[in-house]
Image (cartoon, rainbow, N blue to C red; front, side, top):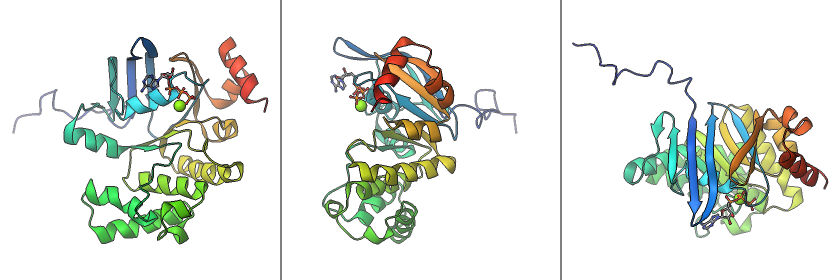
Length: 260
Ligand SMILES: Nc1ncnc2c1ncn2[C@@H]1O[C@H](COP(=O)(O)OP(=O)(O)OP(=O)(O)O)[C@@H](O)[C@H]1O
Ligand SMILES: [Mg+2]
């Protein structure tokens, strides 16, 4: 047998390579330049919290990572592979890159258990009974095992968001993206969701989290990324970012969000 050619040899550093690698990414909406030369690497097990003023491009940053939005230039790799454009490869990418939105996006006509079971059965081909067992386990992990058979509308907002997290986890994602997961919640429900996210972070889940919850950022982030006008202006460990922001934009932003 001949030795594998260099092109086909496994990458020696595959497990060291960043799980998400974005280089020179630009994105326009019409004439609006929403992502400007974005370079961002996220390592395995890393928790990156993205903060910044409204309209700075935080949601767009998340959405381009699982290709809910195409980019205009630059490149994005997930686990060493360029983002697929369409078809089965794109479906596989979406399964590997879980997303949790502000508005839960649970299917209203299905029980919580069916919401969590659907993806593994339809996309991953997991046998239904096995998927249901695992779904119950995940609902237990996010603290809502007793809500499994209800319809989503009968759950509180915090419970619905925890169901959405269980649904994302059911796909065994390599990374979870959260876009303001607590912004639609009543204040007393915010912590129950943040606690689940903090536990996931502690278990080594790779996470990119857009949030205004600065306490969570301080507690759970390995790195805080500050965005303004489509650019990543600062990246630093949370203590450094919060205590010594380097740019006027970040200082101004922090004075506003930490004031209330
Ligand atoms: N589908 C779209 N079509 C046109 N413009 C868009 C679209 N989505 C976002 N934008 C614009 O792109 C810019 C960045 O939006 P984005 O939603 O990424 O910001 P954000 O930082 O998430 O803001 P927020 O904190 O309010 O959620 C904004 O000016 C927004 O109006
Ligand atoms: Mg947003």
